[in-house]
Length: 633
Image (cartoon, rainbow, N blue to C red):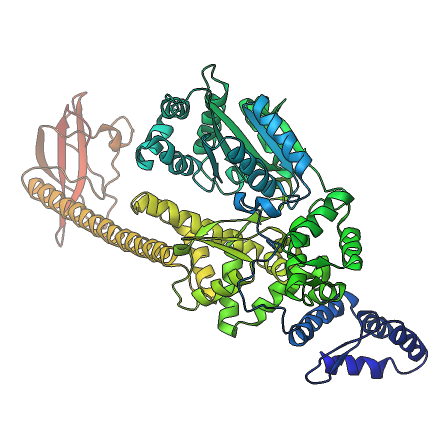
């Protein structure tokens, strides 16, 4: 980077760019590396040089922030504290109920949400991605409910690919019944959720269960079973709208999926009067969200930093996770107990802090690990089918979907330490969808590999269905799908997951067996045709031999003649195969104009047939067959 900047200086040293670069240089300070003495020109200077050389200012701005972060890391020894001091900010992750003491700026909206829950049994909380819905539901609503009524059961869940199963798992702790039995009951009848809740609360008077379903859009993005999706929605509506209901349901849903609710009339009706829209924070709310978490832990926020953060965040609906991440990065670059504007700028600011963190985590990996990181991150994105389906969203997966490579663990740990992904037991997911929007490398991967990503995602889903159905051969790929899966596996530098590889191998084996069976069937059919042909030829020969033998025993021979009967009609109109009489008559000399003559009068139902029998030196002999009655041969 430093060498590139020196090259830019040389290129920009000639008029008319020399004076432009000089003015920009003196108008801003520079960052320096205290250990090596390297000096990094300010961002303004760098961009002035780049513009003077007709370069890509956006690319060089990203590179400046990356190098600035590296130099800041080297020159700030206390940015990564060695003690276990908890940070005042959570970064990309959503605030949890236990984080309520550092959740500021949403106090008014939290009170409104509590009042709505008390009045409505079904409530929808809508907002853009990054506006803070999850934090509001968890650190706001749930934390306040637990404080006000410790005995009130509150369950929080995300739907995932199998919302009925997830609901059963969460509900089993309240009912005391096994999750498997509850899942079977909920799948059998949507009304069973209402009945189970009533049963669990039978001994608790004036208490309702509050079921908070965060990221409700997952029933549209990752739940592929339309029947299960509809059953889950009906179970929620029944549990909250039955006259004897003991349930209250709150769903958190992104606004770009609002129209999907209209496809389910009961859900649309339930949301008609029960919804809250979460908008961007006001200026005062932003000040509280920025300063109060730090003040609570004894830190100070520079006024210039507070002003810059508010200016960069005001009016932006999806900025909160980026703001929180930038604050966390700034806290790591603090000077003593003070969060400074210089640390914020070195971190990359709101617009670049997340991309800088992601890029740093990615570049810290080896070449092979980077390829695994790419495969991992692409698996963690749920692709939008088309623009009408909203933006790409994060996707929660299990570890058995990842390639069986020992280096995967290091990749997961690296990104988890940077809080870019979240590890929850066997589950892995991107911490926040802001990473998809802000990290240009990930966006480029999604753009250039989109067709293969859709194909890979279908392969993953097909393998999951195959496993869920006890490896039913009917679920295997065949034909074009199998060929495309083969091409995907051949062109993928990273191995498929064990489940995906087993599915492809089973499909290939089934296809090979099918082709072998088809070849055997073709051979058997050809052999059958040959045998039939031989049988027909043999039968024809037998018939011919029989006819010849019978012809020697006064059976007429119908070949090589074209006689005419006495009335002048062709003889083949009178063929019969019945009783016959035979007489021999002599023909005239072959050198003369001989004619065949009969020696008897034919009856109306008799026909004479002529056939040259033999020839001697002086005479021609012929055989005359006279047939009577019967059917033609």
